[in-house]
Length: 181
Image 1: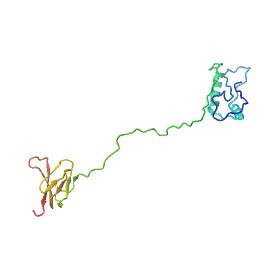
Image 2: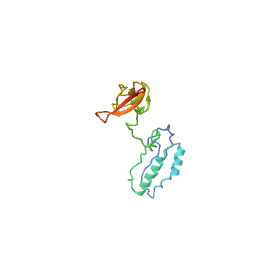
Image 3: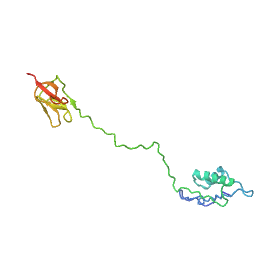
Image 4: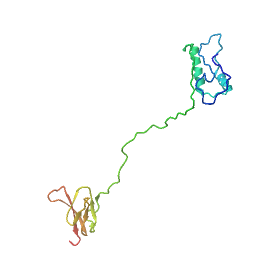
């Protein structure tokens, strides 16, 4: 008979290693007329439940699958199933979102607020910033100064005026015309 249950007391939970440790003999012999047919899944479960065994569902399904293969003649008659049970049930968790890649970008600095602060024709007080720039895009002319960061500022009160350089026409020159002039 493919299923023989022992009447030994049930060991502590988690100590089973194989079907033979449970007292279950799953012999995979082909069914001949002098053998009884294999018990159904419900009969196996009820017999195991009566013995107090806690089984993983895969054990029963695997036993049925192997018995069906034996009856179909795909397994040799001398093999015996050794179904291993885990010592402790472990839960496997799969990712629910694909892992994203990393990037070295994604940073930026604030703008430096460069450019013309007082346009031509506007009144500039002494010390007023006329142009903030990087490098010398604009050059200092009459009554203006240039700071260490190339900021052009007014030295006197007056009106802002932009001109081109006399020799190099690509250069912009900033002047402040005094109010009295």
